[in-house]
Image (cartoon, rainbow, N blue to C red):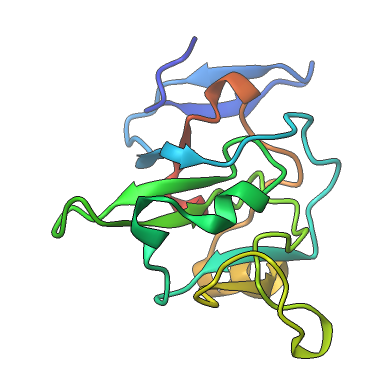
Length: 155
């Protein structure tokens, strides 16, 4: 298993290989509670992504949205370093499939299950990539066994 503070590259044979870099990419460790579900990788880059906005309260440590996400470790807890034990939920943009099951908004403003605080927005992937100067991988860029962390650029 490779160190999570390493840079990953995919060889021409399709296997993920680990390359240690002089300047290490910052990573975020995923903490519980986190979503559980499918581990089959997405087949293509989604058209939209779930983005957590400033309204996220973390639901006092029992986030509702996490239970609706169908992807393993896509939504996860990030503690608030300045105000423990509070925190918030974040989304791993490299594994999000854009299904919108975590949101509370349906078509025409209809309310559904999901975030009770309206803290999740579905955003166009291309717009998010341009505004953050990041190109998300079409397929997850690390094996499922290493989904316990995420490059900070993907959060």
